[in-house]
Image (cartoon, rainbow, N blue to C red; front, side, top):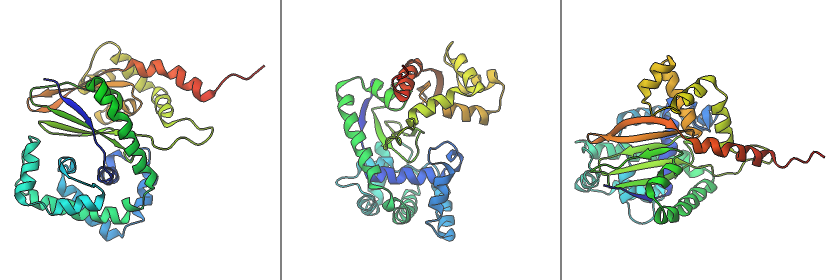
Length: 310
């Protein structure tokens, strides 16, 4: 059964995404903002406040706010969403969670309270101070993608927007929601439930400075400049491979291969084939995404400009 692809955006999505980018330490080296951005954000918080928020983030674990943001009516600014979220009864919290087909945690009201308190602090100290052009750019990105979703094959639009994630249908998946995000660039992240998947895809909101290459061009040229990544791509020209198979063939540690696959995915050089295994999407294989390589000469030529040597 095919699933429906939709596009959604609200400021609260990016508020949550920026918080996740900050507290997911293992991704700091992979996001465009990097450790410089992390240090800048740290300076906005008192150490004791930051420690408390970090402990709260750990307690929340895999708890996802996406189903609640999706269900929230009206304006979904950070403040408006949190007011609505905090006002939900225990029954309403459980109903929204159950609608997604997820196993509802027994301490859901407690998780709601922890998440809400942390997000209010985050919004006050950081997100409310970010450049309004970020939210405006993400809103525009969502608006520009919606017609393509409505007019063409949704699965293909999902793959293109995510730079190579190919999500295969199953008997329970009904909807895949695409959400543009800025703070976690160039990563693509998903909250996966039985009937719906929320996928935050990377958007480069601001154009490069005069004379500088676009981030997308930088990612692909950097990805191709590494010997190990070239070896991985060569393997993937022959067949789809699992992560374990790649590790075995390249003979490097899992953490090293994981790092290289992040770079290749960020550059749009691999297709990530995602299939359901039982009730969850955990069967993942990789293959070469040739269209990214085919576009490279045009991108480089566009950056270098016309040959004016006489």
